[in-house]
Amino acid sequence: MEKTLQRNIIRIYLMVFFQSAMIVTAVIVPLFQRHGLSMAQVLQTQALFAAIVAACEVPSGYLADLWGRKNTIVLGALICLIAFSWLTQADSFIDYLFYELLMGIGISLHSGADLALVYDTQNELNQISSKFQRDSGKHVSRLTTIEGIGGAVAAIFASVVSQWSLDGILWAQLSISAMALLCASRLTETPRKRAQGSHRENAGQLRRELIEDPLVLWTAAAIVALSLSALFSFWLYQKYWQIQQIPVTWFGYVWAVHCVLRSISAHYATTVERILGPRKLIMLVACLPILGFLGMGLFNGWLGLAFCLAFPIGRGLSLVVFYQALNRRLSTEFRTTVNSLVSLGIRGVFIVTGPLLGFLVDFQGVQFSLLALGAIFIPIYALVLVPLSGKIRQQSAKEGKEQLLSNRATT
Image 1 (cartoon, one colour):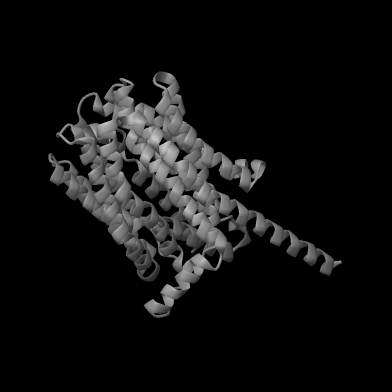
Image 2 (image 1 turned 90 degrees about the vertical axis):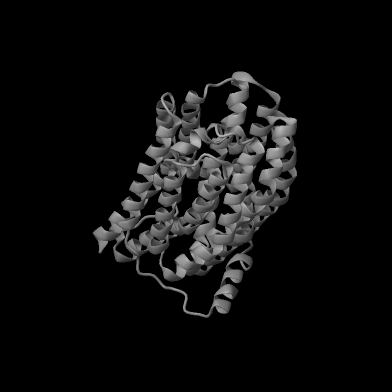
């Protein structure tokens, strides 16, 4: 049993590597625009993707909690493989919409389930023997690092292949997706407590999970806000690179640098948090995206490209620290569902704002749009991160008081 569970973690890591090795990501805007799509249409396809994920996210997370993490992960990987098969033949706006529809369903099925499964696996190993003792939260850092490595490798491969053909990228992506499905099929479902109540009772427990602990609610809100800024910046990167006259064949190399930086910051996220403390880290991850938006909007050339790097650094830090904080406070029965609710918040906002950003880029330009995003996110971060910082201070004071009382009782 121990060896099976240990292999489970390795297989999850491999699966996440192949899932994050999205070769098409590095050139997706030129890929869509070669068939005549405007920037507004590109972001309309992403709005559809966000709408599908939003519609399926919570039901798929709930399904994973009841039906099993492995089952939903395998089904999601299969649908993603079908989507990439469709993409190899796509040549119109409607074709790309259908591709995003399939991807939305596939990704929503395994979104959160992989993280929940690795938590469940490590928790089970911790119970079996002390020699397997690990902090389950460290897997968030490792998974984020692996995602960055997978993205970097895929991006470099995209730059190499794009010198000959963009179609070659599509077929390579199909092969990588098949490897992700193979890894998913080899996973093992871990023994765990499953919800036994009615759907109404389960909904009540979910509500308590989110509301009774204020840190859970405000941490979830912080993840939504920070993830939205990362999502918006991603869809402006490639248009910005075009303005800076970077050849499409170099997009993969530039994106690889972003992925590597995200991996490095994710790897050292817990160390940075230990040095700075939670509240100073919150200030750092709030300042980095604002710095990125304003710097890219105000400057061109190498200086503008340097400001782009604020986003992957902040993203690596925030993903690890905030997701660790969130999952540490969740029960195993509904861990996938709560993670899916967080993703729903991100996608739900993007459904409306994504196309609006596309129109803004088409009519006002990329750099104006970047400055507008910087101005918009300053008050958003203040509304979310200031209360979170206050809750952390209250929690620290409460824990310190409890520890003092415990020490006095012992003596």
